[in-house]
Amino acid sequence: MAETKDQEFFQMSSGKADLGTIQIAPEVITVIAGIAAHEVDGVAATRGNFAAGVVELLGKKVHGKGIKTDISSKGLFIDVFCTIRYGKSVPTIAQEVQQNVRQAIFNMTGLEVKEVNVHVTGIQFDTPETNQ
Image (tube, rainbow, N blue to C red; front, top):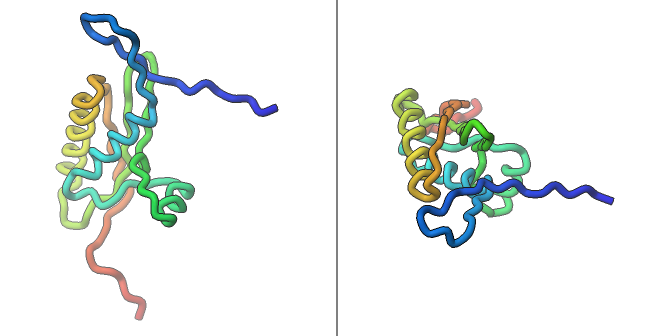
């Protein structure tokens, strides 16, 4: 018999009027961070795994590709693995990604992010290379 693992949710307080609990799945935070990272001008792509690449080849957009979230008792930590366009300032783009991800998550969920770590995995050139 296959063992099933309960899905972990991030629970929030609901303010003054206690009407119930609000639970946010980690996948939701991952998607928000992925969309926010792609909104920054200069980010060419985010790095994903083989499965995400296959899914994109089949025509489905994977918004959480290249994003790793860690929710623990210490707080919310996000890692963004991205490729930057050639000619853009890497430190400037990385800082914009940090700010945009942090702000998007706060605006949509009310959660404070402890860290947004940006890992630049490559540079994308505009002109395609030719083999001659």
